[in-house]
Length: 198
Image (cartoon, rainbow, N blue to C red):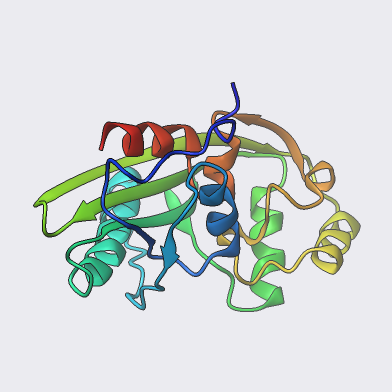
């Protein structure tokens, strides 16, 4: 059964806030939740290689969620952070197209890990749930022309690792092992389960 088959009712939990401005996360969440608000967290993300990958994503998600939860203590706040890791090194959002090109060339022909950290917190209820989901992605071997074509077709400067699974994936992706929605920005199977348990 698809995660979006039956939207969750809000009666059993506080009003939900998504602490992210990502249109991809908003779209994914709307598949399982009827009503939620969006309040963008302005917390800067950490990209430290001194912190283990899963913990790094959880920490970023927690910091984003808590920043909004302090302002809306009666709400359930969902924060998330998605990073691409190549051999344990985090690849964030590229600063410009030159960096995006370099990232795609780095990922060419290799398997990398996409981790999304998720934090659900309600200050008033004194409850928090923190978890992370991991997905393995294998890139095709990309020529310079392949990279150029992809960058021409897809806006990548707001995307970790300089690519989007949901856009022209056949140009760059060979296979995906694990949650595809996790790569897009929110592991909906786990998020839905966490919301149901709440």
